[in-house]
Structure formats: structure tokens, C-alpha cells
Image (cartoon, rainbow, N blue to C red; front, top):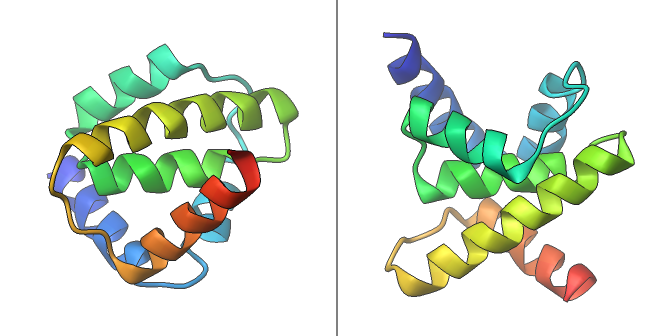
Length: 105
């Protein structure tokens, strides 16, 4: 039931233009993270590629630079997965992802 609630909340956030800041502030308590732990969280919570991209985007804006770097690595790996699939992105997620690619590629 909690996983379903989280998925519903992520779906609602994806339509908001400020989803990155909302998720980022929710992640402020995180002290360390790496790509492997993010992948494990994703598997455990059964996140969609869109949710994974949202998570990576929010972590790439984290106040801690080490977490930012891990978020960027994670996001890059998810972009590769996205390119091999046919997932349709919500407009806000697409726009933020496009800005990320311009800044970091």
C-alpha cells in the first residue's frame, strides 16, 4: 500500500513544474548515496523510468556535492535506458531532462 501511495505521489509531482525542488527538499536528510543504492531503491519501490529520472534530477540539485555527483551518474545511466525504450515523458520531466543534457553533456 505504501509503494502504491508513493507511486501515486510521484505521478502527481511529475505534472508540477517545481517537482525537482520538491523532491530535492524531501531528500535533504540523505547524507550519502551511490548509484548502486539508488538502483536498489528503485527495484524495491518498483519505480518506473520516469520516476527514476525524477529521482536523478532531484539528486542532481542536492545541496551536498557528493550526492549531486551520484545523482548525475544515476541520471546518465537512466537516460541511456530511456533512449532504448519507448516511454513517454511528462512535459515537465522532459523539459528538466533537456536542460540537464544541455548543462552536463
